[in-house]
Image (cartoon, rainbow, N blue to C red; front, side, top):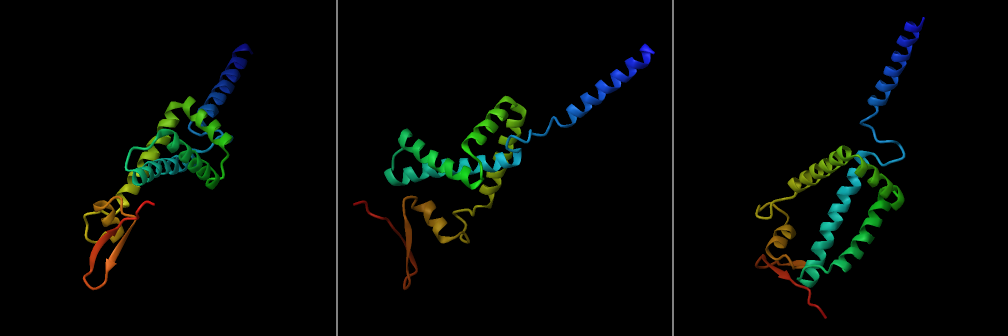
Length: 163
């Protein structure tokens, strides 16, 4: 009798262990999923790069960190709104991923893969089939727009003068 109860108890314990291990790869529902978190972090990375690029174009000097941080906060809030996520939900989810390093590593690998694939889709600025604006931006990085003269088909950068 005791031997039979021991078998049932060990089977029940094994079943609980198997069920717990089966869901080990999934993120609990109250946190943002890996795919969704990847999308948010990709957008945040792009916003961060954009903020640095914009400041370099305006001042021609490295960005002052406090000004850049304020701009980035605005961009991040817009990104969270776009993804329909509150700051609290994002921070709780991010803390969850930080406490599970393997999952955080997976998310960052997905972010790197996404950004790398986006970079590959960009045209080569040297390629003659690349859009004109893109080619000119690589030659004249601070030009706001490009002016084409119809008769000579000469491309000249038009640089907006500061008041």
